[in-house]
Image (cartoon, rainbow, N blue to C red):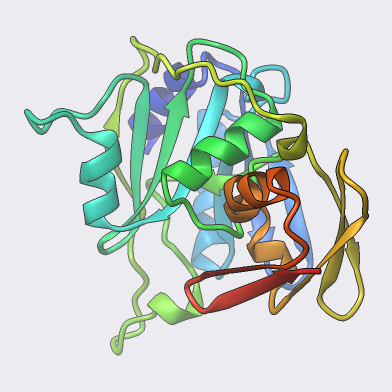
Length: 240
């Protein structure tokens, strides 16, 4: 376990935070130190999740793609030779399911992160703002992963590259892409744009569609359409 945490420490340039998450009571930080490993193991055995994230000062240089299957992992994060692309840390959070951290060579703001996460088919509910990932070396204590024998899968460190960084292409996002969301009750949220509005999005699950809608909204609002229907994985949104 100490070796795994040391590799994570190298990947985040010694600037990262651990946390314990209790689904009932919340999350609290834990300082990275070998002496805290027994405490983390005990909390994990007690049903709590162990999480990691880079410190706030370096978060703009790290991007987390979440809920990827083997096909997405191969398509977006591996070279044709089978070697992982530069700057990746790959964690198998449960059998056949992955999180991939990407260390960017340049600063990425939240709008750009949302754009690239959409391209990478990351979980639409995993917004990049202050994003936590699962710590390898501990059990994934989600109830849905519990086996008939009562066991939980071990989150595994598949690959880590702290020597190189990913050269993510620079993109110029249109003003329509730079939108501010404010959640409203009953499954609606307001989008503020440079176009007449505001536009109302009615969706079945607002928090989970935000960054997946960026590109489609940008394209359609540029044409100033009054009604747009978008869907992904059964979630549907309408802009009126």
